[in-house]
Image: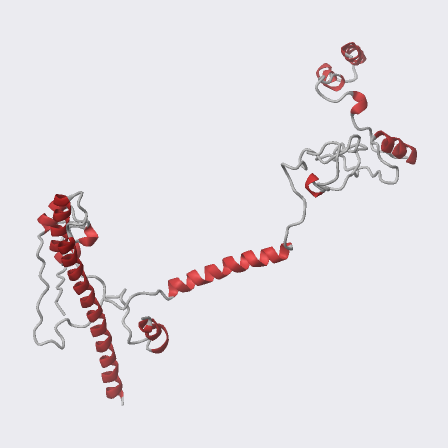
Length: 188
Length: 121
């Protein structure tokens, strides 16, 4: 495989169509990625290409629908429903119970996102608009009540507490030079 | 309990006093002779006893006695009942005076309103 890559690289260099540096990147791929046969092919144009792609992905021709070609490079990869593994039957005996998947089943493009530890697309226990109403209703009500509490405070019917020494002028840390105004408190 | 709030916000909004604002009437008005409140503990004494600022009121001398009693009798936390009662009693009297001041202010406000209405009539 490395020899094939080297041959192609030498051929590209000798042809001189592309600058030598980028020729390297177009022909050689790390061994950690998928092999050439495992990558998606180009977007299928004809019905025969569709049938071939469906067979490749182990799907029925009726079910196979490629991801729409918008230039992002999905190729002929199938468009599967965006449903996470949480929504699959927990009681069915899957080949891989943790992944809730059978052997040979086509894998969603974002399968690693839809595993049971991650994104969950199952429906909420209560309808979404009901949850919104309850939450914002409660928060709005609390905000209104706090506002009213600021406008109309509740207090005991007592005069403010009286402190000696000109309202504790020195103890509060005010200027010792400045003469505080005379405050007189009386018994009642 | 709470009648003053109903008066303040609903029925008598002009005359019910607002404790956040200073009371405007002359303190001697309506009294023959009024005794001034006496502060027993001096500022130096309160400083030495490290009394918290908000507790340096006209009952501070009882509080200082209580603190001394507690400090002397620790760990017997049941020892200072008499001093604690004294401090509590004088704090209570202080609170009753505050209630009376509020009521005095309220009655003066109502009297002022009555006088104004009589003059306008």
